[in-house]
Image (cartoon, rainbow, N blue to C red; front, side):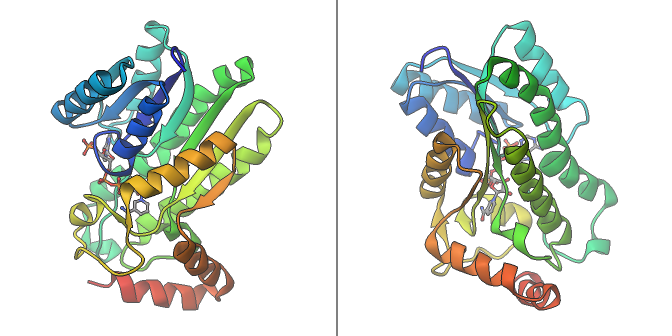
Length: 256
Ligand SMILES: NC(=O)c1ccc[n+]([C@@H]2O[C@H](COP(=O)([O-])OP(=O)(O)OC[C@H]3O[C@@H](n4cnc5c(N)ncnc54)[C@H](OP(=O)(O)O)[C@@H]3O)[C@@H](O)[C@H]2O)c1
């Protein structure tokens, strides 16, 4: 896969970091995006040493409007053709909608939704022109019901899921595929950063396992993959339940 470049956002840790290892094992060259430049440099060194792949680091804050365009322009200038785009960066936070700073809420939409749309819109046309490419968008099982006390996060993932499924259908037969990965509870920094009590229980999955499930589905061109049997069952229940009931159940999990 030498010469095939993968652009991955949120590559510094968690599911994104585990995905970078899978791509590097298969010989893909990588562009790593996240805010933490030092951590990205560590990941880059690890991938180059272990797997002898080319790695570029772009330390960017996707909450800053214009960051996605800068990424596209940097890579266009350096003539790096992106064969696979992984929109993985994302965050959430817990609490009543009105309790948070409006700017923090707008940042969530910018990172989880707007940057994902911008990167897809910028990198998809060259893929379609080459009749070759793949996009992996990391949604969540949160996509399948409203999430009181994490309302914006759940809504952002419902957007990612719906947008990705629609796009997958639009581009079918073009040589380009779009995959929505829906993890459930996954061990990473996500919960601590969201201000959530570290959840445990049988639904919790390891980030490397979730990454492997997403990677396999991406390579097979599957439009949707829910990580793990229990998450598949829980998601089927959430989809089948009346919306108000599903929201009440989610409230039980999220209410501080
Ligand atoms: N963990 C779960 O239970 C779970 C469940 C379902 C879905 N997900 C989704 O899975 C994806 C990965 O989450 P994770 O669990 O791996 O969380 P994580 O360990 O917190 O990793 C999040 C990644 O996103 C990057 N990121 C966050 N804000 C950013 C910003 N403003 N600009 C650029 N990069 C940013 C982080 O790097 P920097 O901090 O260095 O910027 C980090 O690399 C997210 O989309 C999340 O919503 C997670």
